[in-house]
Length: 117
Length: 113
Picture 1 (cartoon, rainbow over the protein chains, first blue to last red):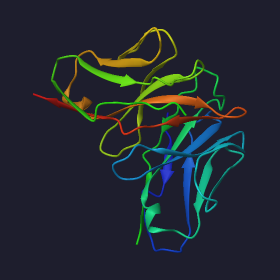
Picture 2: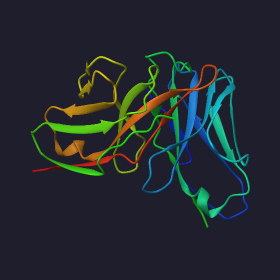
Picture 3: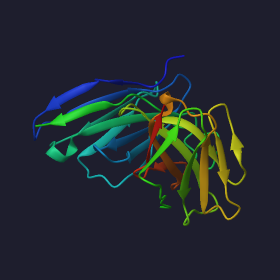
Picture 4: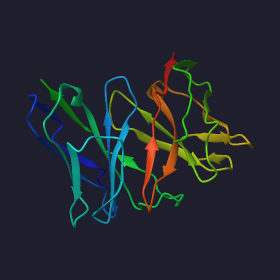
């Protein structure tokens, strides 16, 4: 089975532009989460979507938005890019969105490396 | 959010057991401990998780202390391919049905010949 896929692999943008990153979850998984990983740090939680609804949001500005489609794929949008948005953006899928299920492992994709110049 | 504390780096000889410690003294009763690893800035790879009891799978064993304030990930026979950054994570339930993984800075494990 295919794992989590993300596109594009790499992206270069300039300050002020916007970007859209895409994620396809593992077949059968209904929840998608987005993380930002700045160089040298661990991933930081941005959003979780389950059944096409936002279920959780991390401490990120409103420039960051996301959505989930009926096929459970997801997009992350970032507007008015800043230099500090340069990072590896990771998508993770899981079957459930419930925080109380023990069978809720999140499987990560390879990430999209965004460079803002 | 419950936070984790890990040593920044560790070395292990190939073929020996690697024991990676983690402190999570503020963990709540409904928060699971997860371990992931990340190789060369690829996506993190799930290893194992647990709540109260020790757990074992084909990759590793997880030992959680009785008070749940610390845990140890054990790779029984480390190989060069196990060289990676290992993250000890507390999975935090959020409002409703959401949960998030709160990553720290991890332990960089170097397996040597």
